[in-house]
Amino acid sequence: MYYLGLDFGTSGARACVIDEQQAVLWQRAIFWPTGDQAAPMRPANWRQALLELTTQIPINLRNKLDVLAIDATSGTVLLVDEYGAPVSPVLPYNHPLAHDPAAKLTWLRQHDTQQRAYRLMHQIDYLNRQLLGHCAASDWHNALKSGFDPQTLSWRPHASADIRLLPPVVAPGTIIGHVSPAISQQTGLPVDCQVCAGTTDSIAAFLAAGPLTPGSAVTSLGSTLVIKLLSTTPVWSFEHGVYSHRLDRSGKLWLTGGASNSGGAVLRHYFDVATLERLSADIQPDRSSGLDYYPLLQPGERFPVHDPHLAPRIDPRPDNHSLWLHGMLEGIARIEQQGYTQLVSLGATPPTQIMTTGGGSRNPAWQAIRQRLLNLPVQRAAHDEAAYGSALLAARHEPSITRNKPHMPA
Image 1 (spheres, one colour):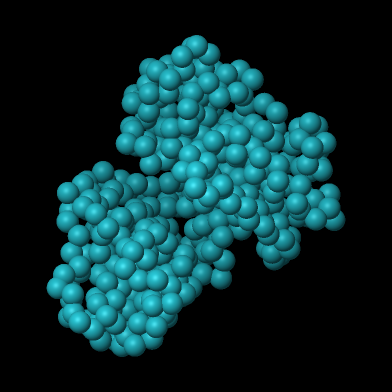
Image 2 (cartoon, rainbow, N blue to C red):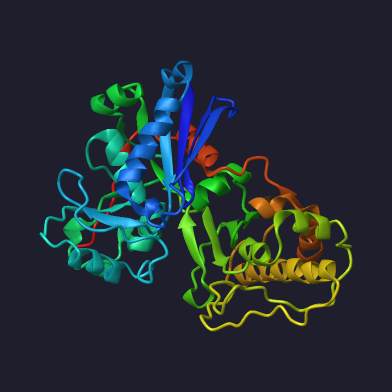
């Protein structure tokens, strides 16, 4: 049996096929058109990428695909009509209203000029509809920012004034249908290939990175610093930019975390890749730089404190550029340390090991600095592609949607 994972992110889309032993058999990536900032938010581009990736799968693997799952950007939504055609613009994950479910839906309704809205769809729901040929249930993870409560498994009463627009919601990994005959003919995917409810891109990356045991944590060192911790207790705190995703049906595993505005984008602003490598080689990571930095490109922070006015702190700048980089790497590592400390103080399970993904995971000096400050085992994840995480989700699929019927508020 073979399993397909599809990842739709902000830079492009990726596919990964694995077997029952979780070995990668094939993977591919395509990227959104350069120079077009709106490209990642065009449904036509999503569909085209979906068709391109699935048709590129070698036929000997494609014919044997049993289950597939998709992950997509959390918080990206649109309205569609009864035929699945968009009737509003896409409201992206980084829109100012992205974290306000009621205001988000109101904005979309205002842009549905012909009043033809049939359903609110997350990016992943739109993609699943392309595969299935009909509207299907959404998943716990993508529905969170639209007002779904993962503790009660129901839509919060204030999520929408028009409840009919909200989709049913099931557990990630639940089978929601089969590939439609039309898509099978277009792509060569088997008509008996099952489609399961997916997840968000960041959770898929977590699934790819490490074991699902309480205390496991994943730090993504990409453009921003994102941390996720597997906890037996959910925690939420808008004040600190913290939220939790339900990972299992029993409610015993929760993925909690947050995202800082600090990260690799700050480093790339001041150093090119070659310079970063050269200066990093001169750093003595077992020693403190003696500098107290909070690296940001502009004022404003989301986590571990939610402060839209927090000022960057990257001064004083020593003449020694290697020392300056040392201070910045240390500053970002300190934010990571504060993030995990904050999660534990809010009631999350303490971290016991930290896996690292993203471009920063390849910097050995930074890893040593982080391990010194965190006082925990830190290692690079064996797999850091979200598409691999979605393929794992497909392999762990649940056989029927009837096992978790979605609850709707009265």
